Length: 496
Image 1: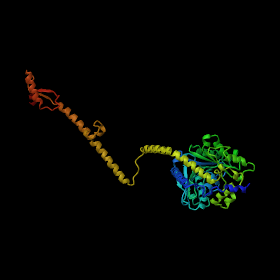
Image 2: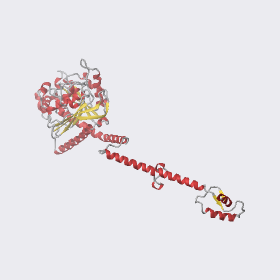
Image 3: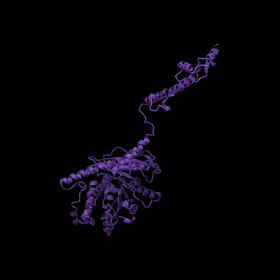
């Protein structure tokens, strides 16, 4: 199916090393460099928010890789990330994997385990993300680390670090068939695209003998949980070696126009197309059939024999370019569709639409984060004060404040020292007692007898009576007396 005469028309196809390099004059170069730097900054912000677990509360822009089992998802992810995924154990499709790809001067890889659900599938109140081993500097060590990480996810009852030393993978324990918790891998390097995506377990139609039929629905529900988020970009992986209609992944999106609007399609295994069916797949690539708003891409990954020989990432990209430039019907594609060919073009397109979506959504994300922070601040007010490094000092301070409060309540404050003199809580015990004592003393004084300096039977002129009373009352308390009246003869009788 090769066409050597057509290879010259693909001489301008960018190589993996130069695919992201802008062409044209200096002005275009400057613009593209600025755009690339800006896009990298936006994706860095997304990576930071994702690492903090904010996606549990806020719908962050993300890419989810969706496909049926054996559709070539693992090979596609390997081609975009530059790492080799575990294959022999079969666990690579049994839990999601988050890939955070980021440009960097030197290559490095970190593996983490993120637990958001318990063993029953219920969401945890507080998600956990723990490092799984030290940073990796050799690509050859990634596959074994990921295999162990996935085993740790599927056996949550066993301490995760035990799997790091399990060189022969002999750690036993009850294993989940699938898990909603996932492995996080953060890859940096000079040839790594700026992109973050989630690799979901492949959609399955049947289970093997002894398998659990419930796994079929579990995997489908897991996929729906991701792709139903409005800010999720779906990377739909369809293999060319199986009839399009028989692949269950497309069934999840074809009935939802809003979901199709944020789906990018990618055709894998183009070398496995049955003779005579080439034009059918070309119509899909041209977006003339099974149309998607973001269109379709086609990629070619190494076959099993090449993987067994340990083909390098660079050699795989050259092999992919050579396949599409020398093999019909791909080599005869129109110019307007050539930018839809190859892994590098796909990764660049995904990074572009992800950064564009993020730049549009970041203001709303910031507003949501601020609202959540306000809610947390209000909730924190209901909790006790934080602990201190010196508990003895804290206890002494508590006792001192308690003593001050008791003294204030006992002694109280005079009305001139408080904003509300009528407030009984500021009066204090002693001040309240003194006030009541003054009232009692006044009442006692008012019971004092009223002296009349004349005999009860005397007839005294009113003017004289008025003057005598005035002199007597001068010795009375200012608030007066209300007691019994006593005349001179009564006083003398009492004196005898």
